[in-house]
Every structure is written in C-alpha cells, then in structure tokens.
Length: 409
View 1 (cartoon, rainbow, N blue to C red):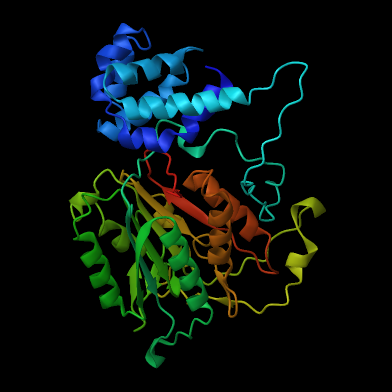
View 2: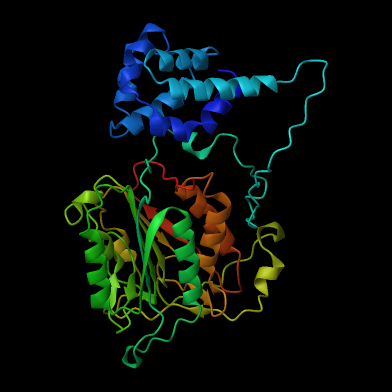
C-alpha cells in the first residue's frame, strides 16, 4: 500500500472502526480479491468477535493488501451502500494526492496547526527514542479494546490522616498526588471517584462495592491507593496498605476482590492497580555507577522526602524469601504497579507529592498517546531510579494477556 494511503487509514481509523458495517463487506471483499476466505475467517474471530474488533482488524490487515487496496476497499464500501464512508475516504485521498510532490517542482508549503512532539521527561537511557511513526493502535492487533466512553471506573483511595493510636504520621503531599491522578484519569476517559481517609474496613467495603457494580458496558477498571504500607505474607501479590485506623489490608486481598468470581462483569477486561505505599522499611542506598547513568542534581536534592513505611509486624520474618518460592496461580487481565521493590521504602515529598506519582503523571502526559502501559511504566522506573540520595525502584506484576493502550482521544 502507498504510504499516503496507509497514513490516511491511520488518521481515519477511529471513524472507520466506529461506523464500518463490516458484516456487509465479506462478499465484496472476497469478490474483489482483497482477502482470501481464510483471512476473512481470521478477521471474524478477531478479539471478542464484536463488530468493532472485526472492523479494527480489517483496517489493520488492509494495509498489507497491496497498492490498490484502498481504492478497492472504497469500491467495496460503495457496493455495500456505505456511501458516506466511501465519500469520506475518497475525498480525503484526493486531497492528499493534490499535495503529492512532483519531481523537479518545489513542494508546496502547507500551513497547519503543529502537533506537539513528545518531550523527553529526562529519562536517562530513553533520550534517543523518537516517537514511532506508527500510531499506537497499530502497534499490535493483540491489544485490549477501549471503545466505551467513559472506558471504565477509576477509584482513588487517598489516606492522609491516621488516628493517633496507629502510630502512623500524616502523609503530607498525598493530596497533590491525588489531584494529579484525578485529573489524569479524567483525561484518559475514566469516571473518577475519590474516597479519603478510610479505615481498613471501609477500604474493603469501597472496593467490594466497586467490584459489585455492573461493568458489562465498560472496558476497564482502575484502582489507585495512596497510603502507608508494609510487607505482608503473600502467595500472589506482595505488600499491604494501611487504613487510617492502623489496620492493614493485603494487596493480595484487594486484587482478589476483582477476580472472575467476585466481579464477573470485568471478566476478560483489564483491571489496573496503582499503589503508592511503601513495600517495607528498608532504605536503598544504591550503588556507584558511571557518570552517564546518574545525575549530580539527583544526588543533592534540596527536598526532604518522607517514607510511606512502617516495620513489618508479622512474626519474626524479615524477608519475602520463603514467599518468593511459592507457586503463582494464573489470574488474567490483572496489572499491579508498585512504587518500590518489595521490602523497601517509597519516598514522598511533602510539597510536591511522591516521586512515583509525580513521575507517573508526567510520563502519562507525554507518552500515553503513543505507548502501551508496560512501556510507560519502564519510563517511570527509569526516571524514579535516578532520583535522590536514597534510591527507589518501581516495578509491576502483570498478568495482562494483551497490550494495553489508554484511550487518549
């Protein structure tokens, strides 16, 4: 396919996926030789087999069907009565052809609003990366479909003030984190709800209430927890977070509230958990690296960050070694993002919020329209890892079956 035609399809993808009456096209696509019967069957089975999944796969595969693929496809649209889409594509294709440069003649200059280029957020090791020419929706046909608007619920639990008996301090700066994420997930087309200063019991009740909603018309669910944290005995997901009463709730319990049995309407849909809490009380002093891997300004920060940590209280165990050899089950469509390595401190600036959330918000702003979730979290890990005198290493546990791209348009 001509590059201009390929770019046109990519620009029009959202409208095509939304409006295309794909079932009516099968015979026309076969009669014009655009696809073989086997290829048609593969398209029919794409994703969940819904019309949108089939349309998305059809447009993706169309790019591989030769130089005349787009004109033939437009003819198929006209043959099946989809004249509005056919006219839309044909007129846009003719406009693009008018501006095609002719050898020996100067290329006309077209003035149009400039599309902002992604700005590198300071990621060492990512500085030479350029935004891919291929839009993120074409990175892989094996990606979760987010067509609903809003695409899902997002619950943010923000624990700032803890009772005196808990021995846990006020989490200054957490409201900054909360507001950043509330705004960010609204921009990413989620219906956002914020709950503040919940006891452990009320945290569980809020999560159970969310899981029991009908998510059948939605495509995703997000849970964000901002609190103090600690180590916890586990088989699946390490760590626990504190309610304002000083009682902890394990991440394992939180995640399992949303499993297929407890929340069937989210079956097969991505469930994302973002945790800002310590994984334990250890402080990472880091190790010496060459100058290009670290930045002097990060070693001498003028801020005075606080940890979101409390000591591990269960028995005399001081590490996760025994738990690390436990066999894991096979949950699907679960993604848990941690701000720090299990057992270690996560740092929070009292003025600017936590290192992890601040970086997460910046990376999502710059790159969410281009990259999948795991690529975004690699950028977050790289940025956070070079901050401060003490060190912090974010990570995640993923049981996603497909690539996940946030909805940004």
